[in-house]
Length: 198
Image (cartoon, rainbow, N blue to C red):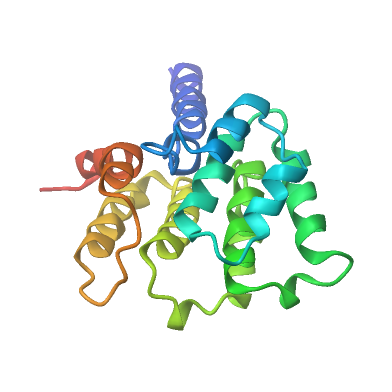
């Protein structure tokens, strides 16, 4: 009996990682026709064109996150993590990056390390989150935090409650596309409502 329980526990754990906040949410829903998103979906590797786009200061953060998401969390994720970091820092340090560059890089790094995002989560200590009111940046932070919560089934309800809190913030800058939010992000995070006790 104990052996069967352990097998079931391992199976549930593996399913959770295969179907998780980082790997199941999508910032590129409704951005599939954007040239850089198309490029990222086709290559799944950050080339010079993609890297230049991600670093440009006049491009909006949600579109940059859509491109990183389109690069994916699969076999090229480690290379994308490294390419983006090196292109952004140019031999300097992470601390010298702009706010947007930090958020973009953290998201790329989290997709690479989705099985264990503890170290990535602590990178947010260098992001001005107290003054960051954009919905897109806060979503990245919350999705990575929700990935941490996945380690403990007793905390899965918090994934849902944090999502509801973010939806309800009145002083947040709503820079995300509504369809991206509803069909790319919340349609997955909302399923954790079933883990909350009525």
